[in-house]
Length: 584
Image 1 (cartoon, rainbow, N blue to C red):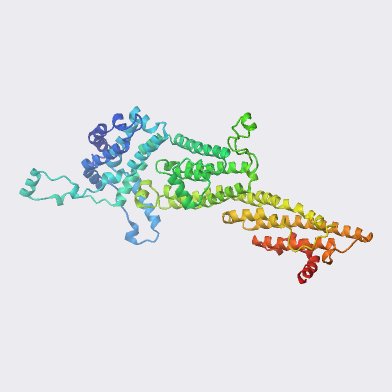
Image 2 (image 1 turned 180 degrees about the vertical axis):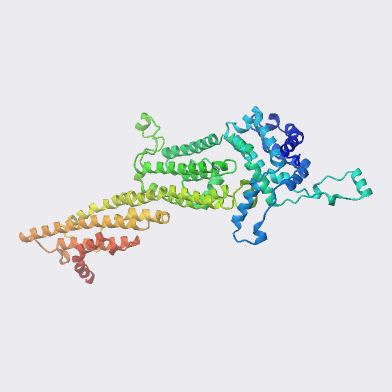
């Protein structure tokens, strides 16, 4: 038939007589669902594997001979001529092998076309495989058929080892013994790796494969999966809103949470949940390669959902906590649930969340990128063959994924910066400014009280920077690297300025009082030979020294803070009084 130019008739006869009976005997709805619920196609992978192995054992030698006889000759220009431009010639030769038609192609038209036709022709099988309506079933079906299709050429054309062959019959042995063994005169095809790759490429390029691929409703599958991801994330966001950031709302496996904590450093359950959800998108029982772009976009959307929740909270638009108690409970003093509050008013919450965002920012462009790259473009030889990557495809996909993830992570940095340099700074500045109201009381302490000159700083000075010191000791190891120490300088600078203003006003008041008493000739010297005003100035000087030590404990250069320098200038006058008191 091939010599007569009727190769298609040979393919059709082989498919009709040899292949279809085997397919009909092994493929049915009852066998597909065997061992599982109706419509789950539990046995699909095993049936396809059984079909491939059966065909290979029964007709593998015929298909190898056909492939060896009718496949276009390979041209290995790189080896023969040593041309340095290997990729160009390799791609050129491969393209020739793909595009040159075969007179008889038993692998594609004799096996794959009948299998695909059988799967698409039966309405029941077609509905069960391509449109099950259940995400897990559709993914399993797609993976089974994708694996079957990607390995079909190698399964049918593989060389069978002698040990795997059937033993010769006694009749055949007798004939060989009688007239001799002439098997060495038989045609023995030599199939290389390139030959099998060319055969596999013809399968992918066939019109039946294109039609077969269109049967999958993959957009619906992605919508089902993404709905699962969003539902999982919405559930934990609601739990955080009701119970706070540290609430135990992680819904995954404990071993997964521990692995994420140990490897990446996430601590808050919501971020453990987010990253675990992001990882689940690329698991073998979820991910489908044709949907890579959709899953990548979905990952960015999930990160954006959490980031939007954080932004709304920082803007004071989300109230945390709940009070499920009735009026009687409130009147009796019994509160059920977490009292309502706005978390952007708590510096501890802000610091924890921004640290988790910083980790997420780093993970998205490093660890998570590696997960995506290893899934879409696996590096091991066996997986690369099944995913059908070209030589440049892995690098291209990695670069594209990196650009997408980098763009999404750029939104995190401004949030972290604003949280520290605005919210945390403003909150701690307010807390540190509260004790400054005690500056006015220094004058009252010595005015007409006959108290001895001060020898130590006022008690309130040690409390000025206490909120900042406590916060820094707790979160210094979780301060984002890009933030540095600028936030501390901002707080100390603002507090020092307020402190210097209060001291300046107090000194002015003391001077006016001394002038008034002097004009009335009622000024008198107290114990120690100091006036009330001098005692106040000495106290302010001692307070300044103590404040300086508090600033330096925070690792801040006091002399670089403008407000602190001004404070030193205001109290410098009392330095001679301090030295005088020390000499006695």
